[in-house]
Each structure stands twice: as C-alpha cells, then as structure tokens.
Image (cartoon, rainbow, N blue to C red; front, side):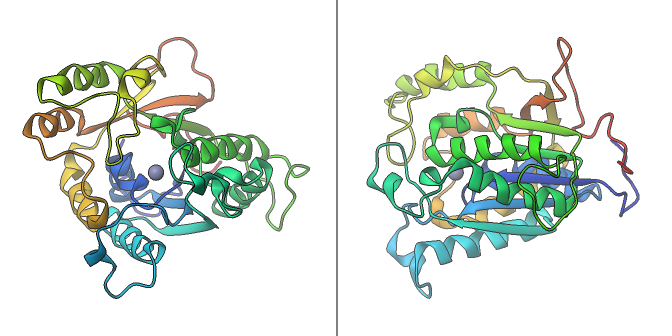
Length: 291
Ligand SMILES: [Zn+2]
C-alpha cells in the first residue's frame, strides 16, 4: 500500500447511518487511506437525532441533530475526509422504539428511494471502493441495516444507466466491503463482561444490544486493515463525538478489551465475491486507478 503521491486517482466512499459511525466503526481505516492520499468521502444518512445527549452538550444548539452534525464535521476534519453528505433522513432509534415509525425515519423509507440517492453519489464521486455495515448493521440497529441494504442495491445499480436514472453517467465501483467485528474478539468480550458484573445481553448505553446473540452471527473476514499509524487520529476524531461518550466503557477491563481490538479493522468482501479464503491487507488491492 504505497500511494505516496497525492492525487493518485483513488477514491473511497463510506455509506453509514449516524454521526459517530464513521469514527467508532471504521474510523482508523478512513483516516489511514485519507493520509495515503486517497480521496475519502462519507455519506451519512441521518443526523443521529435520537441519540441520547446530556443537556449541557446542547448549549448553543437548536437540536440534537444540529449538535451531532457539528460533531461529525469535526471528526471528518480530523480523519481527513474530503466530503460529507447527508441524506436527510431521521434517526430511527433502536428496534421497537416509536421513532421507527416516524415518517422521515430512515428505517421507514422505501429502500429504492434510499438506494437511488446513494447511486447518485456513487456516479458523482466515482469511488473504486465502497464501504458500509455488515448485513446486520454491526448490532442490528435498524438504520444500519437499512443503509446496508440500500448501499448493496446502489452498488449493483450504479453501473447500469437503466436503474435509478439520474443526472450522472453510470459508474461501476470495483469493490464493496462490509465492516464487521471479528467474532473471536467479541467472544472474549462476552466472556469478560460477567466478571465485571455486566450483562452481555444488555450492552450499550441503553442496554439494548444483545452481544451473546451477535456472537452467533458470523461474517467472514477477508481484509484486515492495520491502522496503527493513525491511532491518534482516530482518537482525535473520537473526542469530537463528546456527546456520545466513547464506545469503550468506564470499566478498565472493558477498555482493555476494546484496546485489544483497536489498531485493526476487519472487513467482509462482498464484491468481487472472494474465491476461497482471502487475507487482504489493502482494500485497493487489484484496483486500477484509471478505472
Ligand atoms: Zn450508528
């Protein structure tokens, strides 16, 4: 992975759901490629309107969405992203919450409508590599699942002028990856939690993430990106999302478990379909910049 010259013609597009997804999930990878001169862009489908925020963070802001957009712009600058684009849907909240039914909720929007918007950006930005969540959105957040499905459709459609016709000419990206949490690591987290009095079935700020169930869903890891050289950059971007706390927890043991996982991001390669076992170290392997 040596893209020493800037303007190398390489472009990456991450398609995610909320401000902070770009940092807490694949932030290290985005920062790494930005540093290597790749033009890195982010679509964020919502402004995270349903996120929980302590009142003092809202001083000077009209709404949670406005605050979180600001946090995202701060993080994007730290990560070195070239562009951030909102699809202007509303955060749907976790599964079963009344926010799921809000008329502007991402999870309530027709998938084709969302996919057409993502397709437009793919044709406009012409990324060789597209990144999104895995099929269960990491931990079954309805917005993560919705944007995953829309992105898969958009990836398939962007090269075909007949599908979701728009103002830009068709463009087919080379590769599609899903960010995923390695299950071996997750298994350890699940084992450690009871030792510190935490219930792995009720993880997360709102206790609505069942880690035990997630361990059973396995997505193959085809690419591991070592972003060690930009760990500090990811930390700086994490600090931008102050209203969302950090993804790690107050407990030292859990922080240790998260640190074990940090430094590397894992991806499932959806396209081209891998031929047997694959251990990529660079998401642009096999990509021709002029394509
Ligand atoms: Zn999210």
